[in-house]
Length: 422
Image (cartoon, rainbow, N blue to C red):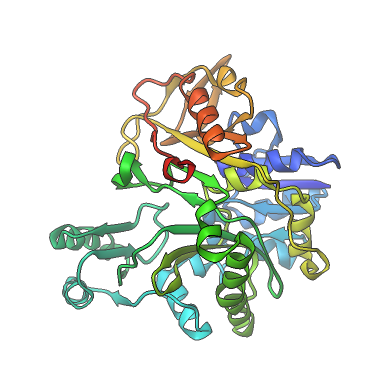
């Protein structure tokens, strides 16, 4: 199969590595890619946000499947253009991608589908924000309505800080003030063909920049899978997955289909396990980063078959995906100053030495080659991924590996999966 993957992050590298690990060989292309992806796929000089350019390339290169990694090409309508030309694509169209692109749209869909979630107020002015904060009370949850690269959410007990966060985003659109939901969070991915869904294995990510869930929100500083505490609460991971499939994924997919906006791609459900049940925090319309880095290494079923079946509308022909009993932990290495003002362009060393640790591989996120040297080109630079038989073993391997990497001023969390491993 000839597969084009759009994107340049660790998520896309993880997808490509999963495709490369299959028994059947594939010709894999990527745009724009990064230094790590360039070692595992052929880089194409292509603007992933240009629907016409992507479609023309896919036609000319006889691409069998396009996989859209990040959210920006989805909102730009790349999937729509590909489908109009009969090219199989894994990723929702612009209308369905509003599930991620607009928090208000997602809340409306959940309400129409009867999906459990927290109360929310759509605020367009400072006065409306203030009134909503007072109505819902502390802790305050303020979210940018549109895309904010995972950094548009603030949870705080400081009312002034909540107001200030809202003021950052009001000039560009409304914000959502939401009810605070308390409990452990779970990320669960669903592959959808617009009708049927197939669930992947649950994961948990760590969004705050610093240990102990301190510091500002980020795009994600680490993750692990599976989640042993789900078995303790629900009897089995399968029972939890079945519950969320029936109460969240299928109702949302069916509601979108009924509205003429079928969701074909990866439905990411950000969930919270409260004392009154499982509720949805948010949806994304693509694979999550860094959860993808720990879910796909455990996938036994061929990823290409899942994605192709969803793109072609034949997901019901496939059984539920199979996952290995192994555990996976990923730790993100970030540049100095991330997430506020990352310092970029600095040399990156020790990456090959890190990958020599047993069970470890590196998913590149923001790297570029400068001759024989690697440079860090963004905030989240790479994901160190470790697979083992227990979470404790995977953690040890991941942290042993990341200590071998050198990047001036870099930082990473030291507590990824610590509680679960204990």
